[in-house]
Image (cartoon, rainbow, N blue to C red; front, side, top):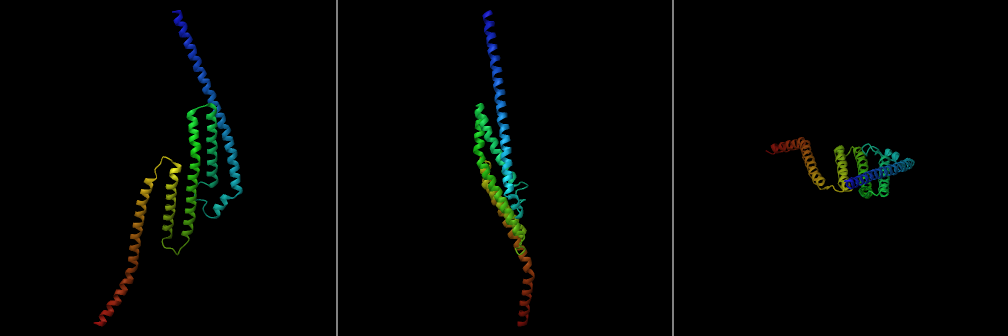
Length: 229
């Protein structure tokens, strides 16, 4: 019995020692991760500040405002988007550094996936931003052309067309697992409906506009016909 109790006591002691050791190791790993991420946040803030100052000196926002496209990014700005992407890339990089230090495979895999995803995210954001800016610029200019019939409607359709195509192109970059096929099919259906409605409306408008002209011409022909008789 004494031997049994001695073995049990040894196992409990070793188990408790292992638990305490694992707990201390986990706390140390957590502290390292927090410390590295804190350093990463400081670095990200500093780089974001420098980028913001650089874009301010290059007057990017003034350029967009002068060309009337400062409202094209749905409330965002080129400077704000660029700073966010830079900070995100820095934080993911420091997350990978922390994962390598504490040797956590899952965290390392997550950081590597994030580092691989960042260039695709930047490319997708650039495509969307460029499309929104181009669409806003073109439609603003088109709306000022009073000589073009249905200028506002055509401008809206062009802007939607550009934005939609940008989404279809950028979607696989922003969401690698997404399938843009459904968007393509729905767009064809919507575009066909818009073209059909526009064609019918134009035909009706032309028909109503020509009604009086056709009536006058018919009356003249009837007068000539009665004179011949």
